[in-house]
Amino acid sequence: AILQSRDRLQGITDNMFEGLCVLNKQHRLTFVNPATERMLGYARSELLNKHLHDVLFHEDRSACVAVGGDCAICMEIESGKAYRSDEHILLTKERRAFPVSITISPLIDKRGEWQGSIVVFQDITEHKRAEEALKKSEEFNRVIIETMNEGLATFDSESKFTYVNSAFCRLFNLPREA
Image 1 (tube, rainbow, N blue to C red):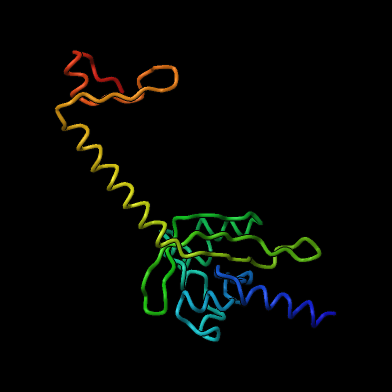
Image 2: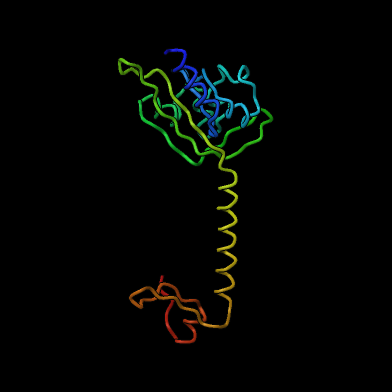
């Protein structure tokens, strides 16, 4: 039964699309799944015992490495709280950076004591590209709408203005309200 349970768990972690890591109390990698190896470009043996900040870049990294774990992320996970962010960068073996959605959850033993952390991450490069393309498209459309000579207004279901362009304000001699 124990071997079946172990094999089942191994099958789950081996077939995950997301990267999965387990950290010890010193924030060093003690387990990585194949997706982690693939995304980071390291062999499992190269990743084991690396510090979280050897692969996770964030602004507090120098403080964390210098002080031995006092960055915002480390303090959060050491307090037993889960940490979640879409604003972090992972570094591959070749030092290529890519954005990730990351969740770090406490690993609590049967006695209720913190033993480390479970890290799950997903590459969100395409999501970030789509977000940036949408921003550019919105800005492009805003410039067109604001510089056209025709007045444009949109209304909500109660016939209240939701948007007016500059030409609309000029045509009807109305002030532009924020």
